[in-house]
Amino acid sequence: MAVDISKGYVNIPVGEGINLPAEIAKLKKEKNAIILAHYYQRDEIQDIADFVGDSLALAQWATKTDADIIVLCGVHFMGETAKILSPQKKVLIPDMNAGCSLADSCPADKFEEFIKLHPGYTVVSYVNTSAAVKAVTDVVVTSTNAKIIIDSLPADEKIIFGPDRNLGNYINSVTGRKMVLWDGACHVHEEFSVEKIIELKKKHPEAKVLAHPECKKVVLQMADFIGSTAALLNYSANSENKEFIVATESGIIHEMKRKSPTKLFIPAPPRDSTCACNECNFMRLNTLEKLYNCLKYELPQVQVEENIRLKAVKSIHRMLEISAKNGL
Ligand code: 13P
Ligand code: SF4
Image 1 (cartoon, rainbow, N blue to C red):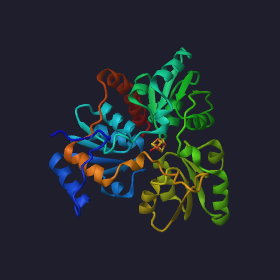
Image 2: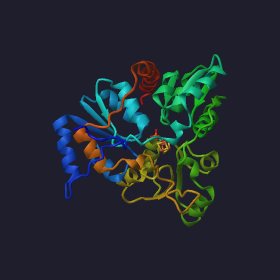
Image 3: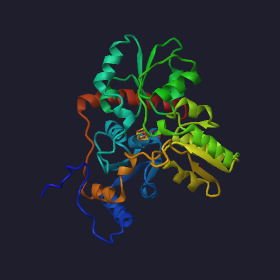
């Protein structure tokens, strides 16, 4: 009987009392599979992953693993990136509904129209985009390598940057470029409240504010350090400081605490204190149950049309090459 994935994941109840981490480890071995997880995943998924990393590291892992199956515990564009780079492998994600509001803010047809309005421009896209957007992109970036990649382009190059306006503005400010920006944003990073961070600073005057460049400019202006998830993590681990207010998706705090168990990490609050808006609802769709079923039934699989893949892979390879040349 065909397995039902009409809901976007394998919808079969997991038997009561089953030891999911142990069963997942068994399946992984049997099937020569690897589990790659983003820092924003639920703690229990990070704990059993073979590798936990930022968007750049996940893409790099997808190119170097010799596993037959990659289970990408993250959001859909991360699964697509792995599939684009490793088309011969089976790439699974536990829940296909794990999208991304930032990627959704940039539909490929509209982005193409935007590109046509700017002939002669080089198109740079953040990795948080669909495969179809990457296919019309000259070079992909992540928040770890965006500055290095923009700096590597000739000073007079005219550049379109999409889809994140906050990251784009930030990169313009640190590179002195005047990139034309697509007007997109992430619903999690847009929500952090300056007022509430100021309140927290009153209670914790020694705390350093760490912010992801997807945050709004007003939040970035009050940050002691701005960087990708991996950069924020390294900063917190290497800093002498003992307290941090963390303005990015709160899942990163799991790894921050693991690396620095004696330090205090306070999630920056969203504007609306009645919601958990500093958690990415898409990232949290992946659960241990769905991960177990996905590995057991090898469903759902990420697919990318071959004509799109062949174009998208060029812009991702260009990113990986520039990163490698710069020691990333
Ligand atoms: P990085 O992991 O590249 O910092 O990106 C954060 C993000 O928004 C992933 O969705
Ligand atoms: Fe997308 Fe924002 Fe979620 Fe990252 S945190 S996956 S950018 S919606």
